[in-house]
Length: 193
Image (cartoon, rainbow, N blue to C red; front, side):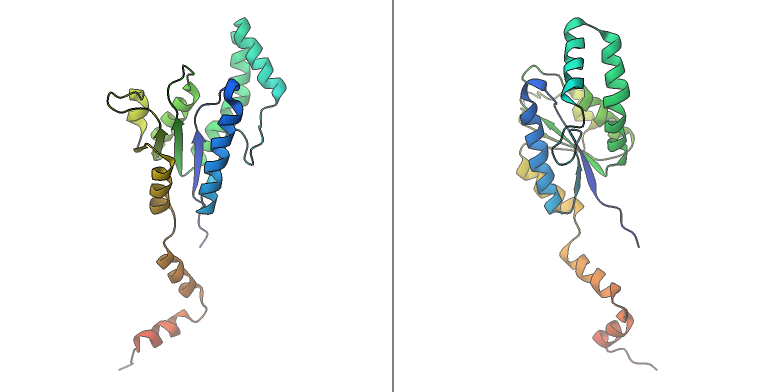
């Protein structure tokens, strides 16, 4: 039987001013998840590489400064959005990091969690923001399945929810054995009547 690999899409801010920080958390969480056997889909390119060239980012930045809506629309709708939304559609669950509010809007992430919710995929939010009063956007809360206030809490939950238990692995090994029925009969000392 072919088993589908468990995977998550890593949504969250991609702020040009804090670009390395945006790459670093994805790479670290990706490594933690890989240790559990979970594949992390990274919009900045798996392995930490950026799939969008610095020249294209600069072109997008300049278009923003100039208010060049046609160029912004062309780059975002034709280059940035399609692979990201394909990753959301293909993942098992979505992970969204929402840091403290620094004035940077993460609207792409809200579109991604909306798609995940529409496709009935679990959405796990990890945040530094307060709940009382709630500093998370209502839309994000509505799309969420669980909200965590630390990466440790998130990783513990994901490990329990999405990884194969050691007992199941042991059972799978027994089943893979060519003579599993004989072993089962021996273990239970079945007798024929």
